[in-house]
Length: 140
Image 1 (tube, rainbow, N blue to C red):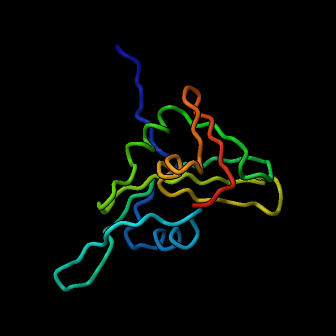
Image 2 (cartoon, rainbow, N blue to C red):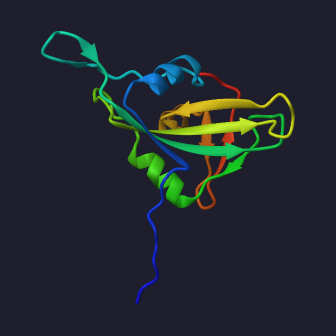
């Protein structure tokens, strides 16, 4: 019998059926929240369909949010599989939550919504092989 190999998923999978997390991330993500077209229903109301978020949590005790962190090949591939496509309204979005200064009373967090675009613009640098990720201080 072959070994059981579960498929990689995120630390937290959250179906945002009421749009609360989407609104929060629009206001609090690092850089700018990605643009995507709204859906127009028959009543001429613009809406965004429910989005399932794949939240990957990366922590450090360092006060420096730009400290490198490890990402598995499966996490990287999952991130790539949910990369947003221009002109398309997503139903699934991958997010890296970078939690830093974890052992202090001043914990910080950065939300990288659709990290593939941060890789493309150089804000996140992914090293292949071991997938260490180096955040930079540049903004989008």
